Image (cartoon, rainbow, N blue to C red; front, side, top):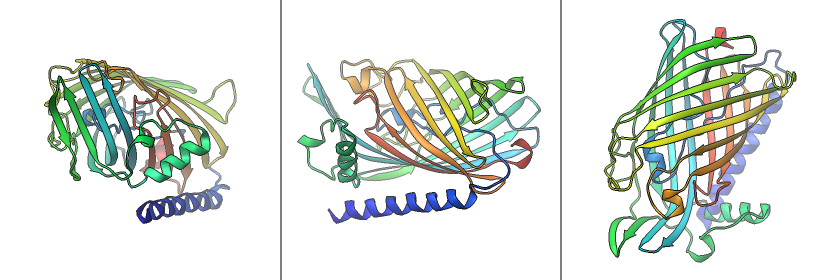
Length: 343
């Protein structure tokens, strides 16, 4: 229990610090271009594919300009599901530290890279998550029937153990190369084509990568204002992913996975923006187990805080709206650099 209280105290300090920063910068005179929160899929199994996220948007960099970000996402898993001859358990936490870099190659073309580092460990924040669910009246899933602070990713089929992972590990995940091609640059609406190649750089035995090479193509759109309200902005993303054969469950994976997201932002001050985002994807596997074989949907809420002219701090939290289709809860913290001329 002392570990959980320590984790809770650490999270509280982060929240208080961010609120203090928000107060200090709330009178800034220049607003940033609205930017979505980082929202990587951090599922114990689905996260191995390094799918697109909402940062792959329509606001491309000018030629010769560079931008970068670092984000950390901690997700808590609590799945214990059985259907006929299949049985799946996902219990523990996954932390994803990701660094991204973008560069404007031409006025219409942008290139980028995402490099994740992944940890799987026992449920340090189990008590915090249970208290959070209790306070909001949310379902606890399988938490009520299992001990706290466990790490177990296991799957059985027809009484055969396919995998049983119970050891803490960390390592580089699957690297994703990205590209964007500018389609339109209107005063209110911008759009771009987005492309991605995911490389099998992560260790598949430790659930850091999928073992396959994946490709994606998508369409991104951003609005500066919504309903003629200057404080409001919006975005959408639609990607189709071709999944290369993974090392894990190669007889069950889906070759085509759709990934969709959309969101709204509201500037309370020129330097403080509240955001809400919805993220969904189709199933990664063919299975009667909901976590594997059903579509996924989760919501993210958070804020962007303009710290300086070039640096943006983000704080977010995500919940699985469709229970068991995504991590139970995720917490996200991010720092982004964008060149001044592209604000």
